[in-house]
Image (cartoon, rainbow, N blue to C red; front, top):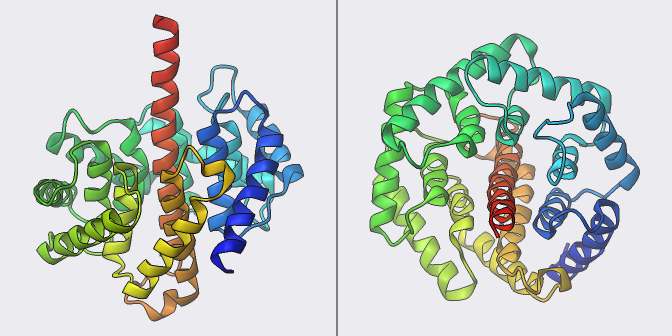
Length: 324
């Protein structure tokens, strides 16, 4: 699909999502759902999404973090082709319950993390404990930056099976090295430092150089923001070729002209990267990565990071409103 066709797809999908979500749902959430459908090259199905939202609401208590602004986003993540909605909802709650039993808090981020767990029930507890060990090690490396918005990557990266303490030390080394290359300190850079260990856990200075070169190129040709840092990390560790980066930039420029992105131009680059990374799934067998579904998992993790950012923004906005 060409850049202009993708731009039209964004505009059409956005209107459909907005119509379903209603005026009470934050525009950032609507854009993230739109991005998810477009980058996954899936047709938006309002009836299926409604059914999934109903399933989540029936299972969630009145004070569940699933209720409210982020409900349609979680429903979109669950509502994948060929699934039985009731089974997916039950599976999500089972995974999140296991995460809570090992010490993760009952927040929207533990549900996002549950999405990234394997569907084999016999592995739930093992993966949850691996994730908690890695999370605790990350907390020791970055006490103030590490919080529940790191749950998703703790689950995803915990499945790599490394030694948690050494894995977390590698993340911290990447953080400091990237900071020295002009990346801004903060949660987004911490997420990127986690991403940098996805393929190989030990620190690799060459990856830092590649990441810095990517950042410089995007700064020259697009509007790159800290929220894009984890995605730059994915492009780096998968060694995405120059012509693919050029396609991302071309697509970003086209998307910046889309009406829904008029005041949210940073989403253009997010969608551009997500779309091109999804295309790589066609060639996953040709890569050096042994995980058959690795890029699909990464796309989910990317969306989880965006959702975490939105959740933080929504909470901050609500707090400011109540204070005023």
